[in-house]
Structure formats: C-alpha cells, structure tokens
Image (cartoon, rainbow, N blue to C red):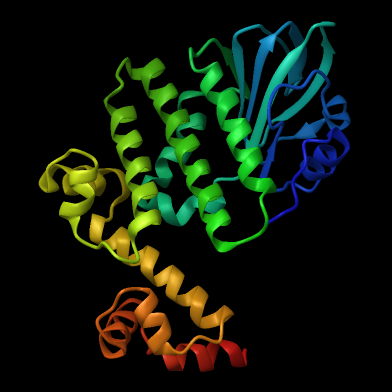
Length: 291
C-alpha cells in the first residue's frame, strides 16, 4: 500500500508517480502544482467543483467547471488548470482500475464505459451525485491512511470497486436513461462487502441471499451477469486469497490455517486448495518461498 496524505506537495508526488490512488480526502481550495503543467491522465480522473469555478484545458480544448459540476477525465488525455475563482472548493479522485481487475471479472468491459460513452478527452456535467463522490474521496482517504494490513487493503479495494460501479451507474443513467444497471452494481458491491466480512465461516449462497433480502436464484443469476462468476466462486476466491496470504506471510501450520478458515480438517482444506490453485498448501509454500 502506498503512503497517502492530503498534503498538496505529497499529492503532487503521488500524481507524478501515477500512484494507483490519489484523492483530496475532502474539499480543497488549491490545485496541486503538477496540474499547472501539461498533466497526462493515466487513470480514471474525477474532479468535483463544490463551490466557485475553475477553468482548464483538456487536449488543447478549454473548459469551465462551475459549482455542482463534475469533470470526468479520459485516460490518455492531457489536462492542465488555467485559472480558478477565489472561493473555489473541489474534491478529487484519480485511481487505477488495474488493482480491482480481478474482482471485476468479465465486467472489465464496464471499465471502458467512460471511453465508450465519452469519446472526447473530458466531460463536464451536473450528475446529481456530487456529494456522493465527495464522500468517496473522504472514505478512500481514510482507508488509505490506516496502518498497512491485509484487511485495510481489502477495504480500500472494495471502496474502489464500489466507486467504479457508482461511476458506471452515473454514465448508464445519463446515456440509457435507466438505473437498473446501477441497482445490480449496488447489490454486487454489497455482496462483495459481505463476502469480505463472512467468507471464512459462511459459504452458502442462501446466507448471502438472505442478508441481501433476495432469493438465491435471483442473486446467482444477477451476480453471474455482472461478474461472470457465481456467488460461490467469489467466496472461494476470497478464501483462496486469504489462504495464500497466510501460507506465504506467516508461520502458521496448515492445520492452524485450516481451522482459521473453518474447514473441518486439514485434509478438506488441502483438497479445496489444490482444486483452486493446482497444488497442495505444503507444496505451494515450499515452491513459492524458494523463488
């Protein structure tokens, strides 16, 4: 996890280094210095104008963003600030989709939605979700500044996943005039949160369906359409990820790892792990640690 701070000088460095996440952590009144040159947008870029206004150029075309408007920047475009009002207040999120690619599954096509519906370098409009985007900036900043741990990294990843679905919802609603896609995305994001919390002890589709007040059949069909995976496959991915972490980063015995993941015995855990990874937990530890 990269170090994170809302200090503008550090934000400058993170943007220059193309960190996977750079966000204002709330409302700011000055832009990072790097934006006053020709800045190459390498990730998804969102700047929300909460008060005042600012002028900028994107690929040589001049734009203005006013209070209540959001700027969506296309990856590969060039951006620089030309001026701002004295009372400016904005929030900012730049993040990479690569870090959540595994969770997105077949919906990676959704990550191209910004480019598909927005072929120009940027779009400026009032979405009606400006306060939600500010909240994401605050939550992402809070998660990123917490001490480094597997749990906190998972929390940050899920927040980025949820934000991605929110953006897709915004674009779908504007382009196709429907929020059905957004509803599915919200359910999926909540499912991923539940799996992150309960995967070590709950593996049945019925458990997660009941938590979401849905039928197991509907949840299965919906998740398959969004991610290309079944609910059980998503749970198994979470278990496998945690198992690999424990195998590679701790000295716990295979029995201890098996118990912590609620398997009835090490043999059952070994059978599960070999099916998911292709080798036994013991062989995996030996082979990967020798590299």
